[in-house]
Amino acid sequence: MSASTIGTFETAHSDAVHDCAYDYYGRRVATCSSDRTIKIFDVSQPISSTADDGPSATGAGTNATLNGTSVNGVVGTPSAVIVGHDGPVWSARWAHPKFGTLLASASFDHHVMIHKEVEPNSFVCAYKSPMGTHDGSVNACAWAPHEYGAKLASASSDGSISIISYNGASGSWSVEKIDHAHAIGCTGVSWAPAAMPGSLVNARSGGVTTVDAKRLVTCGCDNLVKIWRFDESQNVWGCEATLNAHTDWVRDVAWSENLGLPMNTIASAGQDGKVFIWTQSEPRGVWQSRLLHEFGAPVWRVSWSTMGNILAVSDGNNTVTVWKESIDGSWNQISAA
Image 1 (cartoon, helix red, strand yellow):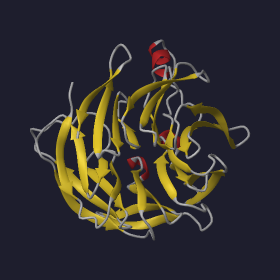
Image 2: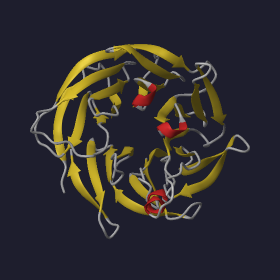
Image 3: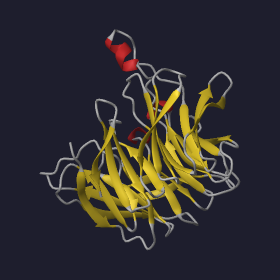
């Protein structure tokens, strides 16, 4: 199997693009930039093109690059520009469509915003984190699996994690915090899949697929990756595991979909130029690390495919590489752009 770039389109951002992401259906891309804006593009491609289950789009410079199996061109048609942040926008993420068309953004201005599409290509601010929620840049945000409701986790340079939840009965948003999650600052956050590892195997034996406890993985400037679990009985988040392999800031983390299979998998990317694959073979078991590759430059982002078997990596060499796990457990590069 191989992957290739299927197109690059100009975003017309006036400064660097830091992030871009497909929506749930893969028909729209949101980009965010140091120019303080978020832009929405309708993405189309020729009928002869076939998209794979590859990772989300990855931003670099002022262009957006899309990865897939076809070499045919794509067209990114600008459809909306979202403003509201007072600083560079580092991250943009779409919510599951069951909650409507919601787009979250995280910015250097210390705020998280949730933008709602009220008419086609018309977005309004549905939520902005109150002043003081974070005392530093908000570097990343991630929506929880839809089974948990409309929940958004955000990672900040003040060292804390915030979890923003929507209450359908009251129509309001509330915030809870994990303070002092990482010394110096927190740089990335990702949710564990809702399906309990091994639930697919159990379902085949006549069992019922169950939803696992809420878990997060975070990373920070303390060179660490941490796993957090929500205790429903105590209504509090607690650190379940601390993973130590990087020798410099950990820039990003991503928890892979497990599709109910009996294993948890996390990718972490570091300023040290390394990407590690972390695996846990049983609930609350030991996490094992495996070096994916040394890239020779800081690694900025990692992103899993929808199926959880392909990993995209963007690094300081201005390169996006795509990796796939072999049957023997080794990881092979299948694309570079």
